[in-house]
View 1 (cartoon, rainbow over the protein chains, first blue to last red):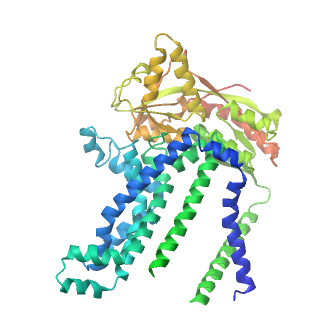
View 2: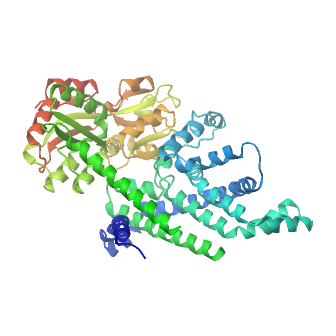
View 3: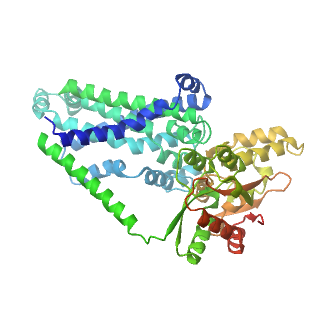
Amino acid sequence: MLSLFTTVLLVIFLLFITLPVVSLFLRISPEAFFHSLTEPVVLDALSLSFVTATVSTVIVVLFGTPLALVNARRDYTGRELVDTLTDLPIVLPPAVAGLALLMAFGRRGVIGQYLDIFGIHIGFTTTAVILAQVFVASPFYIRQARASFEAVDRLYEDAARTLGASPGAVALRITIPLAWGGLVSGAILSFARALGEFGATIMFAGNFQGRTQTMPLAIYTTMQGDMNAAISLSIILVVISFAVISAVKVVTRRRY
Amino acid sequence: MKTSTSATLVAICLLVIAGLLVAGCTTTTETPEQTTLTVFTAASLTGAFTDIGKAYEAQNENVKVDFVFDGSQTLRTQIEQGANVDIFVSASTKHMKALQDGGFMDNSTVAPFLGNSLALVVPVDNPATINGLADLNRSGVKLVIGTKDVPFGDYTRQMFEKMAADPAYGPAYKDAVMKNVVSEETAVSSVVPKLALGEADAAIVYKSDVSKDDLTKVTRIEIPAQYNVVATYPLGILAESPSKAEAESFIAFVRGPDGSAILTEYGFDPIPA
């Protein structure tokens, strides 16, 4: 039973979270919303966001899964440091991430100046958007993946190994399938974070419709002129975010 | 488990409430006769108005001037959404007009006070060897301009329109230049850093956007008067400002000899009152 005091706190807080989100829906008519969905600036942002967030999630899963598995199963010097480094982007302000990426991959950056010699420019390209998303979104997958791997009972892995399975086969046939729910929810969270990325992108990739202007950047830009487009894009992001959290809840519930 | 969670929740709430109370107390302990003026100022005036604010506060100890610097359109939106502001300084007459039409401004106080023109800016080592507008249509040049809705982006487009209408350049020039645009920024304040870092080859900003400090990193190239677009900056007091007398005194200072000297130093052309 909740005490009256707890109930009051709960209601106040829920209202505080719900009211601004609901206000977005109240500020636009359904006709204006659907009309905005046909605007090129909205369509470009939608497709660019989905493509970049998908690519960056694939990259995060590809590089993050082995790393999470190693950190969950092996004990080596420096493991804590590696863990801290991979978690860093979660607490780092996106502005710091954007500046750091510029310093590394910008035209005069630590790596960028050598890429420049070969005529490779990352700044102001869709590649820059993806790099920014991978940087900020990777911890969401890696943390979840590591926790799911740690939750897998080693008994099954040992059994497979004594039956002659190679380490790779153990990972692919035993550990990964058993950790599947956690991996999927981690990937979904990482995708959602990539979709919402703003600060690092606007600093590192710039703002150009169809090339680097993702949904959050388009919201920021259209707010200067076409408020309906900004609200419509915000509503789409609210709906996606809600769906993502629900999906994660369903996926993790099925497993445990 | 359950009780400890709700205990934590209550503890956090108490902390938040305590924080709010403390914050509330500190504001009331300020000297009672001190007035705070909130001035919403176009981002292009960041350097000049920061200096003007300090000079004004030094002469008027009972007034504290708080600036919010952002793109004029963003500031206008915030005012329309109910921000508490005393003075609005806009980089375009369009946004001031919109607020006047909406009844947000004390119309008798609104006046143009400043002129600003566009300039071409390149990094100091000029990697793309750009010496003037005629080099901007070369393929591969990375150009940064403002979005069409912010004043400096709007003026930049007007300038290219003027050039397209001139047979010396023509419409093909304008198309080629617009193809070279790699980023459209919403505020001038984010353009110069992109040049200073060498990310872009050139940008069109206000003449005044290049501060003395910036001149070690970027070079300013004048734009011929026949293509240049001169922006007029209006300022005015909000209809609902509770401190109109102080606001008038601040505006008089901005337009007086001290304010004009600072504005000229930053590359603006003050319009005499």
